[in-house]
Image (cartoon, rainbow, N blue to C red; front, side):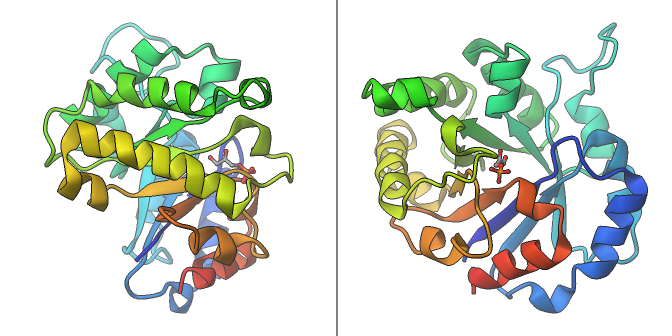
Length: 248
Ligand code: 13P
């Protein structure tokens, strides 16, 4: 079983979201796999209500605020996301961290906010090229993970991790299956220490960063890779369908 997730980022207005679901055939979804789509917030309701969307394709929000409500112009709460049809929440995507200055502390607060509304957090971690070249991959991703784990109340709480090396996002440079397996192994070991062997084994760790139909199968076959988080290739129903099939 694998998790195939698509992060549409700031693409796909409501009408395009509807068109996606009418072209993304349910036959392409292999029985045991889980398929998630993270539309931009403005398209979440359209995606949720779209009759062409098979209900097995679940939805998530790309970001939430850490407060439940209040005077935070332009922000969206986890409660609103849940009531608009989200079951998952991306937290700490590198674009949030890098472009919008999101800190480890804020990521931890957002994980807690998502869980208060029964949204399943997908916690994103990943190193920059500079950090990789300085040999700091484990240090960086474990620091990011530890902050987020502080908001996980007990081993029964479901959450996912997405390892997305920043240098691989939108660049066409994919981590090798060995790079991915190495980072995922590091994350899994930390999970074992933090929440125990059983919970760590069932926590899905997704790889993200230039996943394409041509490389999805080899990445999904790598040790400790339980799924993929796809950006650019997820807005095209044919490519996302091919990636979904690669999980079979
Ligand atoms: P790309 O697949 O476009 O590299 O984006 C990956 C990503 O950031 C998914 O969250």
